[in-house]
Image (cartoon, rainbow, N blue to C red):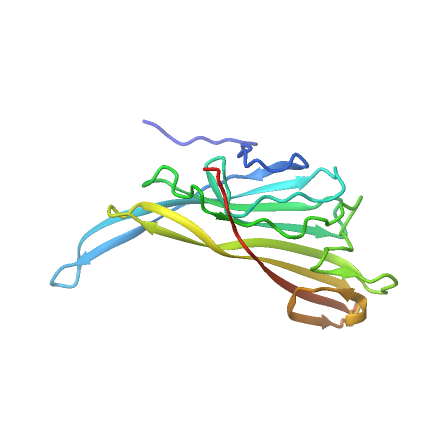
Length: 237
């Protein structure tokens, strides 16, 4: 009788084709889901059922090596290593040496062999964020840049790029074709101190902001910035 295994230290590099400045760390645990269809009989109880549209989702974690002068990002909507890149999130923290990247992906387990071939992809616009020797950058291009002479300072920052994804099923209930639309970027920053408009510059929309006084520490500020990006049609499968 076949059984499962107990393994250690088993994450495998998914070969997503990221820039060599990113070192694969962890992830790849697979979450598989299917849609369940059912019909009821005349007595109101289940008559028949079936599963279809089987999909697997996963995330992969990377750490930046500190090489190069700026960060090079994956393209959202691209297909690599058999995975469709749904989104990525990069985090910086004042207490951590390097940036940490999480890439979220999915694939279909039945239906068309390459359902996301030539789908729309989205290239991040923040291509000039400088790589600090430690902690968090002060300049995120058009999204946010700390003013010279500002008394407030960054605690952490999170940059997220994603797009909306749509899947169409074929006549057998399995994947026929998928595509993407409405790519977006968000940058969330937290600062030590009560920041004002003179402390930073940004051309992105600023849908939320706030501050939090404390009776046991410094006042902190938080800002969220949002920007939407246009697509281009990829040629790889």
